[in-house]
Image 1 (cartoon, rainbow, N blue to C red):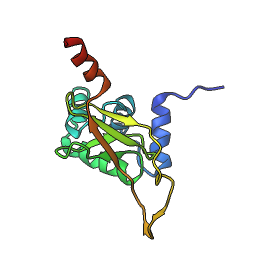
Image 2 (image 1 turned 135 degrees about the horizontal axis):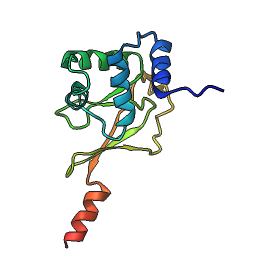
Image 3 (image 1 turned 120 degrees about the horizontal axis):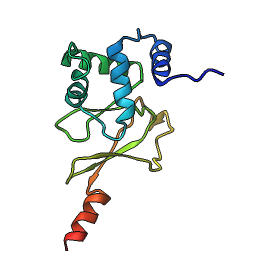
Length: 146
């Protein structure tokens, strides 16, 4: 039985979604999947990949991410209010922003409307749940200082 490599899996993901598996798309998708906890910005993705792909432009990253969003391969996270972050987890879930370290965490909480298509007669197309506070790592650091 042949083992499928990660690149073959990513290539299949792109072609299954009607996208040509260009090298840049493959690397951007790979970056999103390997940095799922980071919820990276366009700039972070670009800075990481331009070292390996010097011909890559910021526009390519933007356009690729917009295409991924349109094909439901990624979602945009706007929790900070000042920047757009990207997430390759496209199933409905909430996000927590630590207001000390600015890290964004995926939060699995029971949401009463997550599996509903309508609320009060309104059709739901997207659900975004954002929580803000201080993460447990920052709280532990604060307690250790006292």
